[in-house]
Amino acid sequence: MTGYKRVLLKLSGEVFGGGKVGVDPDVVQTVAREIAAVSRAGVQIAVVTGGGNFFRGAELQQRGMDRVRADYMGMLGIVMNCLALQDFLEKLGVETRVQTAITMGQVAEPYIPRRAIRHMEKGRVVIFGAGMGMPFFSTDTVAVQRALESKCDVVLVAKSGVDGVYTADPHLDPTATKFDELTYDEAISRGLRIMDQTAFALCGENKLPMVVFGMEPEGNILRVVQGEKIGTLVSA
Ligand code: UDP
Image 1 (cartoon, rainbow, N blue to C red):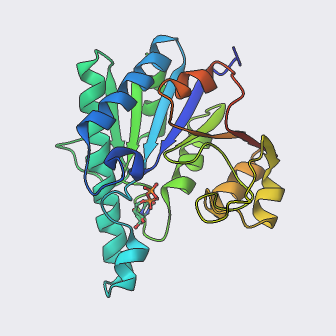
Image 2 (image 1 turned 90 degrees about the horizontal axis):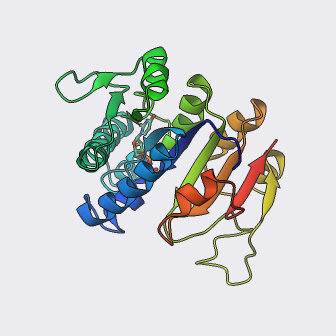
Image 3 (image 1 turned 180 degrees about the vertical axis):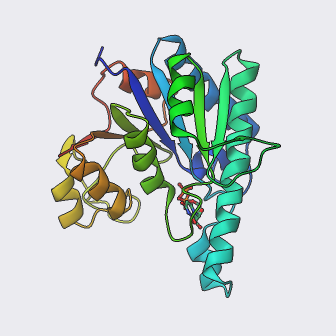
């Protein structure tokens, strides 16, 4: 075991959509099973979900929309992913709370950091939704901020289609090679795009480790939590 007591898992929107627009219930069910396994192993876990399977503000802006409004649409998309994940977790008998950065009392609790910590101490999975509640941010940065504020030991970044940090995008550059380990300074100076640069900088400044790994095969989230060396470890 790694000794991780509390982890923050970042799931990008792609994971929820199974590569398409919207939510693929089969995929979400699989992800929920993996999160349940981590929780049952006695490790506290919070999740930050992305929303790229619905809307990305920057993309809508390029197609003529106002960036701020488009970013709010992005944040609302994120909440749908949170609710889907909550549903499948609860079907597995795992107590779950969604906390959103934009208040919407009918569907979720507001973001209250100390309460989130309390939920985790009681063994509940906390899902943080609606990003930071502010335009011009990405959920990568939110994942790091939430991990810091809720005192997580590590940020786990689960990716679909790529199994770690590479020198370049392996889908575009066949000569790209994977890092087993990397520092935040290197990630920033090489301009690596797997996470946004603000997220790398915030993690680095606060010496919070990050593991970037692939969702496939099933079970990888628990493997990482249990200390198996898969993916790429990024540290200060
Ligand atoms: N977003 C935002 N503020 C935040 C987090 C997200 O405005 O604090 C918006 C932004 O438009 C972003 C979209 O929500 O493109 C979806 O989030 P993101 O792109 O980070 O999702 P992912 O790439 O992880 O699926």
